[in-house]
Length: 128
Image (cartoon, rainbow, N blue to C red):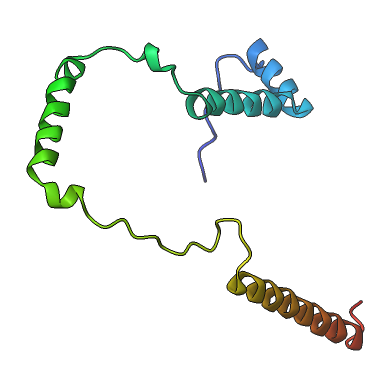
């Protein structure tokens, strides 16, 4: 035979337990938790500190030295500085291209055919 579960010293639920049970039944607890998660998400992800508000650290003092070192490295390698700047075709720059127009018609006609065949099948099988 299994032992009986341990009994609490007080069989009456506490006032806090009653309040939490009432909140859980009303849905208020879920709403409060959802609001807390939303506020936390907005404060930690959506907003960043202002540029002047960043704390100064020991690394910030060494920043001019790092900039000078990178400028010296760039000056030491002039072929990299004068490399060809080639223009690549980019389909999403805003102008109409043959590829974009063909893709539009292929996708719309393909989805129209899928929709028509699906409707035909569902009506023949008397599902709709």
